[in-house]
Image 1 (tube, helix red, strand yellow):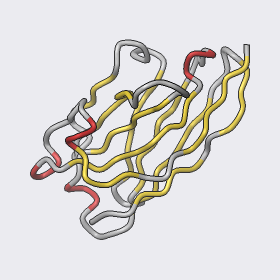
Image 2 (spheres, one colour; image 1 turned 30 degrees about the horizontal axis):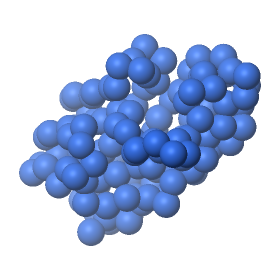
Image 3 (cartoon, one colour; image 1 turned 90 degrees about the horizontal axis):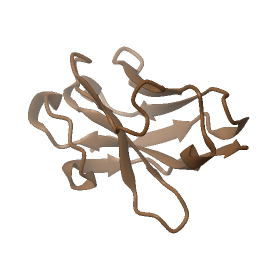
Length: 127
C-alpha cells in the first residue's frame, strides 16, 4: 500500500495562493488515481479534486473549479494542488488519497474509493 505525506499548508490572506503537495512512497505511483479532499471543523470530509494515474483526466468540485488545479509528477511520486483566489471558506485540513481503481483510470468523488490517506495539512484563509 502506498504511504502519503502532505506538505505546504499554511496561513494565507483571502485572494492569495498556496500550493500543497503530497509525496508518495512506492514504485507504482503512476497506477493510482489520486484525490484531494478537505475537512473543515464540524463538517464532513469533501472531495476537492482528482486526477488519473496518467494525468489524462481531472475532476473538480464545483466550489473550487476554475480556482484550483490538480497535477502530478509521476517521476517524483508527487501530486500537487495549486490553490488560487482562496476564500475563507476554503479553510480546512487538506488530505491526499490514493484510489483503488485499476490502472488509476477512475476518479472517485466518494472517500470510499480510496485506500490510502495522508495525515493532512492545515490550510487557513484569513478574511
